[in-house]
Picture 1 (cartoon, rainbow, N blue to C red):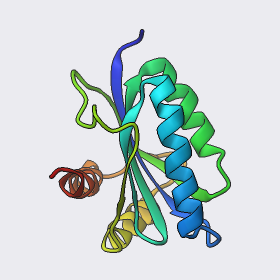
Picture 2 (picture 1 turned 135 degrees about the vertical axis):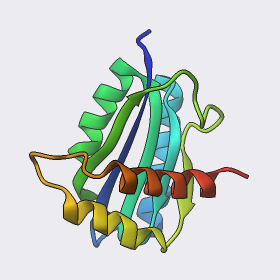
Picture 3 (picture 1 turned 60 degrees about the horizontal axis):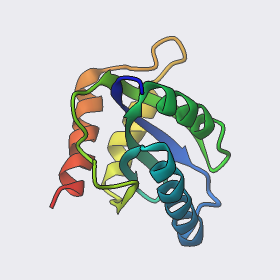
Length: 138
């Protein structure tokens, strides 16, 4: 097994995403992630996604490639990809949160993104990550 790492990305949800689509995304991710030993949380603002994924180098590389090709969202921007010593979401194959207030921060991060500089201002990335993390923790 490879080293443990965390990937955090944001994206714009396709206009066709509704509650049925979200339910399907979460259920499929939970099953798939259990098989791959991937943990994390998906946050949805109604127009944007923010997702934290934790797992081995190999599993996350394959999963992030698959996610970047998913037509249910666009403008996928990895805000950070870092090694970790332990999981923050070890008990969640895929948690889910809805928070409309995430939209403005995610839109700002996506607007600032360029293909040449995919991981812009680390302060904004951490702010969004902490927002999601705070919501996810009891």
